[in-house]
Image (cartoon, rainbow over the protein chains, first blue to last red):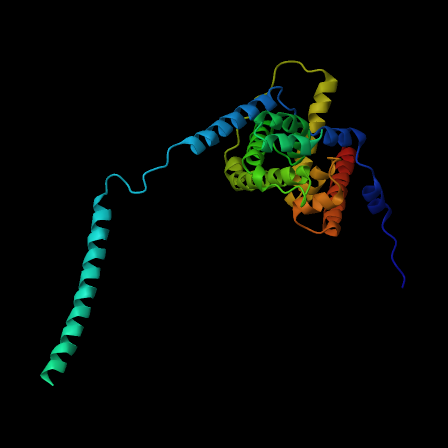
Length: 104
Length: 183
C-alpha cells in the first residue's frame, strides 16, 4: 500500500531537538531548594515523633463520657422504654395463654 | 545513599536517620514539581507534605513491592495533581481578576533577562501540556526512575507511559520550534 510521505514542515517540527538551553532548564528543574529545607522537614518529623510517643505513653482514656448531654439521656430513656414495652408485651402474651389454658 | 540502611535505623527508633533521605530526594522532588509547572511556594509546601506523609506512613512501605523513590514520587504526584486541579478551578476567577503588572525599574543584565524569559516560556509551555503527559515528562528527567517505575507511579502500562512521554516531548518541540521561528 502506498504511504504518503510526511510534509517537510511536519518532519522539521517533529524531528527538531528540544533546544539545549530548555533541556538544561528541564534538567535543573526550574526551582531552587531552600538551604534549610531538610531542617524544616526534620523539625516537623521530630514534633510528630514526639507526639506519637506521648500518645503511646498517655494514660488510657475513660471509656464512658463524664457527663451526658440531654440528647444522650433522651436516647437512653427511649431505649429503656422500648425494652420495657417489649418485655411487658411478652408477659401479657404468656398471661393470655395461661389464663386460656386454665379456663379450659 | 543506602536507603534500606536508613529505613532500618528509623524502624529501630532513630528519627534522625530520615534526614539523609530528605537531603537525597529534595533536589529531584523540587525538580519534578518545577517541571509540573508549580511555583516555588506551592512546590515547597508539596515537597514538605510529601516527606511528612512518607514519614507518617513509613510503616506501610513495602520494599519488596516497589523502590522507595517510586513510593515517594507516587505520594508527590498525587499531591501535585490535587494542587494543580484546585488551581485550575481557581484559574477562571484569577483570569477574571488579574493582578496589575508592576514593571521592575532596576536594570537587568541581558543574559539574566534572557534566562528569565526562557524560564517563563518553558513554564508556560509546560502548563500547556495535559497533566498526565506533563507528569511523565517531569518524572523522566529524574534518572533514578526507569520507564517501569514511571508507569507504576502513573498507574498505567509501560507502553502508555512511553506514548505519553513521546507526546509531551513532541508538543514541547512544536511549541519551541514555533517560538524560535517567530522570534
